[in-house]
Image 1 (cartoon, rainbow, N blue to C red):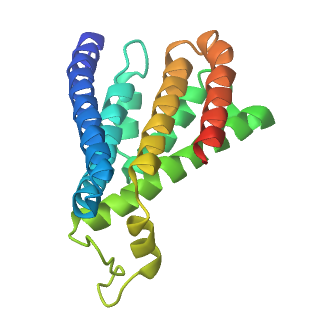
Image 2 (tube, rainbow, N blue to C red):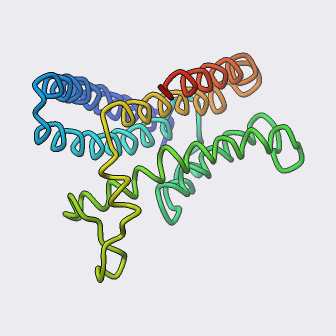
Length: 212
């Protein structure tokens, strides 16, 4: 794949992401409308659809970020795509991007930053994906264990606790993650150092404010 082909794919995927975000905006409006009407059934339906949509947008943005112009090389793109899971692909994408700034294995500060990003992936990508998989497999109200022999009460409770605020927080955190990775891969010597801490501080403040 040549640089022009990578760019062309980025343009196409960016259009997909923009349309999906339009869908998200409309879905959130619907949920808020039904909240005002106290229509619990419609709120439940659309909240679970929102959880599914979040994971769809996450995967779409992953492809978009992966093909960011002047970013990863084609061999790196192939290596990232060929991991055992999308979560492992996200982690490798961060590791390769951070290596553009410095070898995080030999720098405790960088290792801490890298581990923080991996933790964000665990909380805001891996865990929502686990819930998405259960919903997508028809476990809409009661979640079953991996052998489908009994209820998994812990995951049932997590799906039952989903609401529009929580999923909106996921989506906002995801945007910060995308900004950080783009800074890493596109401008590792300038943009990363200039913007990383700005984005991290904004992210931490957002999470603090969103607790209530």
